[in-house]
Amino acid sequence: MSLLNIITDFILNPWFIVSLIFWIIVIALVFALKNRKEAYSFFFPLLILFKTKKLNNFIRKISKKNPRFWRIFWNIGIFVSFGFTIFGFYFFYINIVTLILKPSPENAITPLIPGVTIDLPTLFYMILPLLFIMTTHEFAHGISANNDGVEIRSTGIMGVGLFFLVGFGAFVEVDERKLRSSKFHRNTRLRIAAAGTFVNAITAGIAFLLVINYALLVSPFYTQVIQVDSVLPAQDGGFNYGNLEPWDAIVAIKNSEDPDTDFLFLNLNDGISLTSVLSNTTSVKFSIGDNLTFRTYNSVTDLSSEKNVTLGPRYDIYEKIRFNYIPNGTAIRITYNFSSSSETDILITEVNGTAIDKLSGDTLELLLTNFTLKAINLTSDLGKDYIIDVEVIGVFIGVQSISYWMHKNDFAKFFTSSWPDFWLRELVWLFIISFSITLFNMMPLPVFDGDRFLKELVNWKFGENYSSTRKKKDRLIYKGTDTECKLTEYRVESVESVKILLKDAQKGDPNSEILLGKDKYELVDDIGDGFKDTVLVTLPETTSLQKDSVFEVTYEYWYDDKRKIKSIVLNTIRIIALGLIVGNFVLSFISFGFGLFWL
Image (cartoon, rainbow, N blue to C red; front, side, top):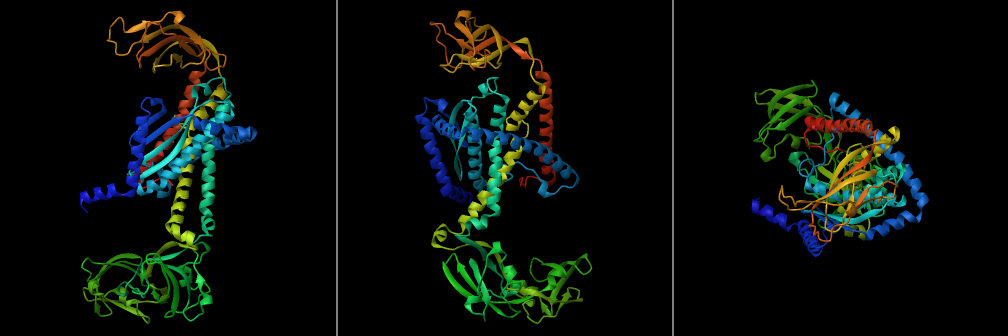
């Protein structure tokens, strides 16, 4: 296929067209909101965030319906989430030891990187679970915050439209500055920090239960049977070439001599499979050489039919030697002899006196279609004969098969057999991603909820001691309307000076900064916790301040004398957590490369 054809197929793919339409709509909305840039965040071609306050009421209604229930619910979440923090340390420690002493693919932990560790089709299955998990995670934070009286600054909708991937989710933005202040109790911050992970853990549990009971869920509409993938011709050892066809779903089986009432319907979830029938362990009884009647449905032709299938012998030859054909197909090379448990290299040119020629159909497998075979005479290129006695160990019909969801009614037929398989994959990924996020998110690393959790625990353990003052200088960018300077410290004693650093002013220009008089600013308690934290600036009437100019505030604040020891403890635990996670990634990559993802 030429590069032009690949590009053409890519562009004409329906999912690419949908993605293209998605971004056209997004760009149109961004253009319409060009004067309200605070209403969106645009990361083309990966992500778009539209901020609004309309979802705030929805979250508020949910949190106010039964406040007592939500308070108990989120309190339980504190203990569950902290349990995942402890389990996370245990898991990553045990896993890293295993990767060092006895590495195996089951222990590999690899980041999910599209195009590197996962392909785009797999990423397509991940996108809906990922957006659902992100949405419920953020809504959990929002409901918990609202339940404790923490202001939700904004909510919004996020969209993803990359190549063949289109999906939507939501996010919640709480007032983090007020939340970190003494206005709110430590338990409030713990509940909010744990809420998202708690809901992710519940999602993982529900997804796991749905996966293990999936067959029961879809049983009113589908049953899982076997579908013929390919039929082996006689030269490959098959007995039913030209009879069974690819895409034939095997719905029911009976002995050809039995009445139709004896049809045994296949159901893989009940253990009734083609393998179990051919093992002669079901109600369908037979002998080698008998015919079975298969009731089939072909999804390509949309036809149901009954086909007589020959039961041939399965010999134990593959339990005695291992072989493969040489490139021109005129001989086989025996590479292993199970009777002596040794490697070997014998070139066989004749089987029972017939020269091997795969192109002409003269193969070892063709000999295995003989119903009365007792021994095989293999003649090497050196003229030496090797006699192998063979025994029948079962039956063989000569098909390769895959599982297939067979519809039970027209409703299920309309959605095709791909529908249950699609949702099963979605549920599997929902479990994998939600459990992974639950585990990783509660590790105490910056940005993760586990870090917030650990801060509160360390602060609770060591306490606070505001007995001394220090000076600090904050620089805050002027956005065009807001002249409130929200300082980075919460217990401000006094303001020494406030300067305005003008935008685009030349360096060294004496007019590049304006020193405000004390009558032009006021130190206030904006948060409402009893401590001053914000400077309100009144601009001189003659001052026309450009956007992106800078307020420079120098002030004195009360310092927590235990901040240093708390920072040491917190950073030590962070380093241990980071070392465990990075160590797992590095050892997984060294041992197995990027060919695996964490499961």
